[in-house]
Amino acid sequence: MRLVRLAAVLGALVAGLAASSCEEFHGEGPEDATPAYGPAVVAVSLEYAQAGDCPQAPGACEGSVLFYGSWMTTGTFVTLERIPGTRVFRGRATGVPANYPPRAGAYLVRVYDPNLSGGPTLGYTGFRIVLGSEALSWVTSVGQPQEAALVYIDQDGFGHNPT
Image 1 (tube, rainbow, N blue to C red):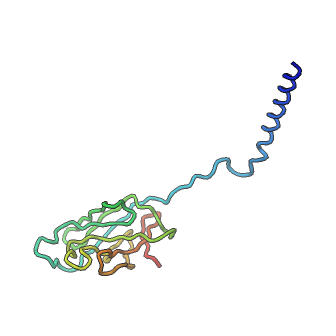
Image 2 (cartoon, rainbow, N blue to C red):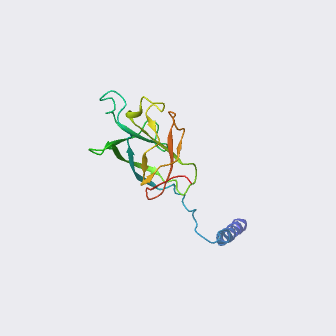
Image 3 (cartoon, rainbow, N blue to C red):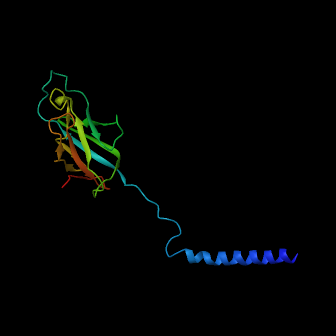
């Protein structure tokens, strides 16, 4: 009986010491880690200006003008709407992860224009694109089917050319 009582007292003493020492292992600051948040996801305005007249047979260039961005899931695109009476097309991309200031590589963006389908780029271009109010000026793979412009997008939905 004495042994049981002694074990109970010792157990209570150890538990008390352990409880009082927990604070010593907890330093200054919050108890939980600060949650990590991904980049802001924004909507971005798009504009593309078609160049020249349609070089194909009449009606061949009436197809849709499509926008592609490297952040988009493969097979997805934004269909751009023609501004009546012009050769300018506009649209809006949503769900764009902001990548500016630069944290990694720039996004690749391009447009499929049926006007250009008979040329060496097979209809794709990175030229004459305005993304998030920024006229894109850095184009890679010029004259090839992989032609695309480079751009960074900030948390307000504005585009930035690489410097």
